[in-house]
Length: 274
Length: 246
Image 1 (tube, rainbow over the protein chains, first blue to last red):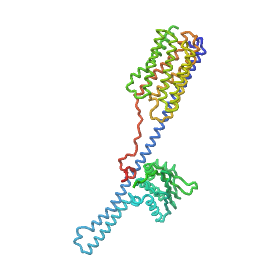
Image 2 (cartoon, rainbow over the protein chains, first blue to last red):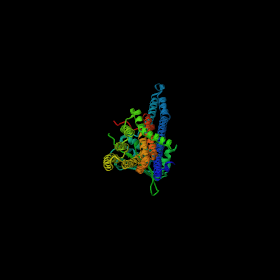
Image 3 (spheres, each protein chain N blue to C red):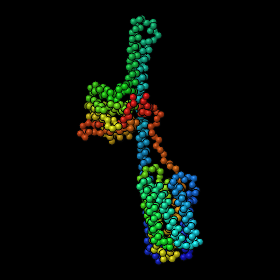
Image 4 (tube, rainbow over the protein chains, first blue to last red):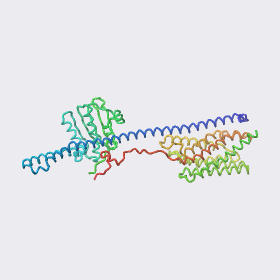
């Protein structure tokens, strides 16, 4: 108050008000910067947490899938291979030497047949883990084979066409891609009630593209994302986790004509050295 | 009336003494100095203290106004050079960095021309106004860059932020004082002292902020890295294509 009564009171007032205004503005800017940055960091942390939760879900799904696969193999071995080998053992017991020659031959023949069945069974289990067609002839042959088998069942029309697969992917990539295709086809067979499934493949740049068309009841990307986040949809989670391992992308969509659904896979190419 | 004058004198003297605060904190935290920014800040703190000693000696012993004005002009040039360089180290944009560094020479030339026009008999406020305006603009650019940056460290946990806050408060708080100081040439010493209170308080505030800014060196980056990736030892055979082909 005393200052304002000085000779140069007008200029003093201007100076005080100006300084006050400038300082208020400065403090305002500083506070805004601090709060804005805090908000940005909080948002980033939230996004990171969501991503971590998603990864955790995928990891859990992968572990659960592996456990289920082990249980299935254990069940196959215990329920099928076990009894077969036990039966074969019965035929080849100690009394075999005391039996008549014709009966001996009959027992050996029966045991041989049972062992052959056991070998076939074990081979089937082994093939379900790593299809030999895939290992020996690649993704194109394995996929075509799978589609021919589906078509051969007569329940629906299935076909696969590879446009450009001169250079095979790495074995690990092929297996992951094949498992994704298998899972997608299984889902279509189980849930969509489709009349046809058609697969086409092509390459562009350093990416391989696979597209599956079907005319059944399908899903679109938001539904896939939703199911992927939820506790349901183990198969879809497996697809998502495999896509992640491949560094690829997947897109679920419906054709503009609304007559069929499309699922497109994008896989970065890592060419097999072998 | 006498009491008020005495209080004002004390505040002005405290403001002069406060220029040593950044230097004291620099000495205390010297062992933790590991960047060029802090080294430049240390040089700035030393020069600031040195100039305040020289100005005080001249003010209390020789009482020579031309010498005082000459010292203030030298101080201004050194202050501009160091702060401009410091800001060029803090700002990320390369063009703005270059602009700041290359502005030192024009500012020096401008000061020289101003000195040739006014001499050292009178205090010229325009170079200081130019300096403040340039710093206000570049500090706002620094804040803008920090807002866009996706760093995980909270901005108020960094030394650079508090150095800029100190300088920003100093430039904005003293802007109107420097702008209007020429209007008080003919005012009495008491009136001048009353107006100097604004400058003094802002200067004390700046020096406290600059000094305390170094305490942020103790704060570590507490941001944690995301470690929820797929572990590699789970033998998820189909999911980890790590093994090489023979």
